Image (cartoon, rainbow over all chains, first blue to last red; front, side, top):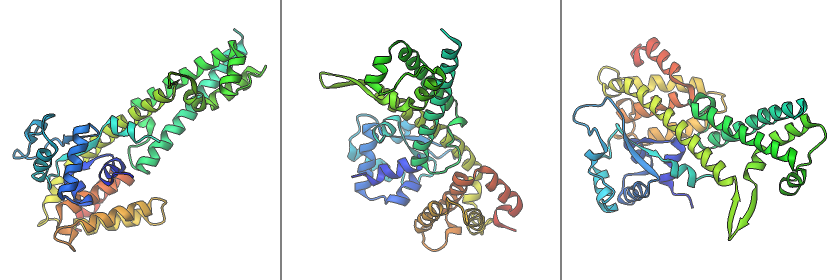
Length: 100
Length: 228
């Protein structure tokens, strides 16, 4: 069965966290699902350039590292639920594994 | 090497380029629909993909000329005395040839399937990155207008009218309607997308995705972002 979160990200080719949570809902199970996709390398976070100074500028500012647990990442994502400048984008791995 | 065999190789290349290009474009269309910026010849990787697999097909064509039995046994391709026709057949059969399993050793399949699907995923990934980069830069120019709900009160409703006019009767209308419904449903507080930054961004992205940047720019210039 296709994961609806990954399916949405693949169908759009990538979208802001604000748009994604707007479409699939920002509840804990979906944030954990996104955390799992981030850890498995099927999606990555990117920051749109030219945003306000108060916005995070680098992925390190998310304080998400390869050592972060899914619960920790899900908690961080909660703080970015209305982030229009942070985009979640499929990686080569996601395109490869979803190939027919 | 005869002149016919050279021309046959050229035909194999041309037909293979068309076959792999069509296959990749169909795969991208099945994933992204008819979105702006998803034409494979709009990116350098698209040309690279077609060129590389065209050359591989010509290599198979040459190998077949030297080994008719192998062509018949492995790929069910008859090598005709007419080398021009053979070139066309080998070119049009390119995807079948690339994806055929040539041997299985210790349960591991030897063939081009893995490489072909890897290269196609690489193309999709790169095309999508270029598309997203362009889309992101475009939307960034409009972000002040998304946020300024006080000065541009009719941004959403005005641009929505443009989108509906553009999509009416087109083969994209069902896809667009579904996404527009999703954007409106996600509006918080509900019922007034004109006052929602997210809805404005979603709608602008939607027009960009299906009709390109020019339609948004024209609307912005003619309608002053919904103020006229």
